[in-house]
Image (cartoon, rainbow, N blue to C red):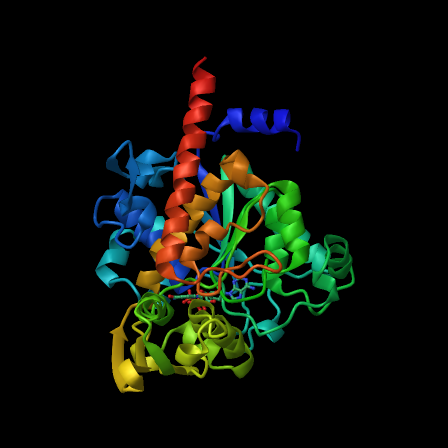
Length: 439
Ligand SMILES: NC(=O)c1ccc[n+]([C@@H]2O[C@H](COP(=O)([O-])OP(=O)(O)OC[C@H]3O[C@@H](n4cnc5c(N)ncnc54)[C@H](O)[C@@H]3O)[C@@H](O)[C@H]2O)c1
């Protein structure tokens, strides 16, 4: 881009957030329904949006701390409207009841609102999520036809809202590596017509969203937009992307502790992490192929924080294991244990035990909300719109997507700095736009 064009783009500033923000959710289960019910509870003044950086976090403005939602032009919660897709019928009330995350009393009090949101029939392939059987599924000639049906759904929602974003809260798909069909947009679009088996359902939603110029965030560990073809499309159409896998329970704690050991030059010889989980996500992850996707997402964290190649004496020989066991009695109230073997001065060993009795979707919902609002902001920000992967949102992910040849940052504190610095840049860009508009 020429310097003049660049200046003109900058001068345009951040587009204001007028009208309704439509949030489209493929996969309206525990996280999806907790997000929707939670936003409504906050709107009604029944609860605070705890855990949401966009709603409760602050940033420095002229030497004072100001709420982020006041400092940058974020869409207000009152303007957010939801829709989505799921393989189960029913409404968001039924989904929330099945998920069992929120109290029955809470849900009953907003029953008409939750019943007014019904998932549209999904694009689903059992091969990718082996433990679930679809009841509410689209039929089509090939993957191109199915993806175009999703585009039609999006077009319909576009007529009722002013801006849109899509966030995948669907089940974890089986593990698969990028293939030739994922390398270029041309190969991918040919693959849609050829019904290529390596194009996963989540990729069909992502392609449809991007084709419609809509940002796409991935809350699961699936490959989805972590492929060159969809990164190319994202940049081309100016619709930001990010992923993958919400950083909620155990990995959240891991990315707090590990940087602490590293900065104090304490060694680590082993890190054994195990979980019991009884929700539908736990059931899906009980299949080895689906678990492998989650395992890969969780395992990368330590290596990227410790950089064993730079400090082999401290981190060159870590035994790292991650287990998830499906245990129905616990429902969404996951328990995550960590046994950490560390060593200090002269190599003397020590142990740390962490037992996190968490609520998975209570931790995930505010992350999903922030991603919706920040991705909408990124799309309205000229300097971010065409950059593809939004690395400044790595803060939210277990396995942050990064451009080819670049390692994503995993340290939660460095990620938080990157997030806040980007918000500062957006604030300045937004102020420039306002000044130009006022002239
Ligand atoms: N709950 C958490 O804290 C958490 C944390 C990190 C990541 N995640 C990931 O987020 C995702 C959602 O988690 P959850 O707890 O809500 O699971 P869930 O099983 O309650 O909900 C997922 C929903 O996706 C639906 N689905 C599956 N394939 C679909 C498709 N092709 N199209 C439309 N819908 C589809 C399922 O029917 C289900 O209702 C999972 O991939 C999970 O691994 C969750």
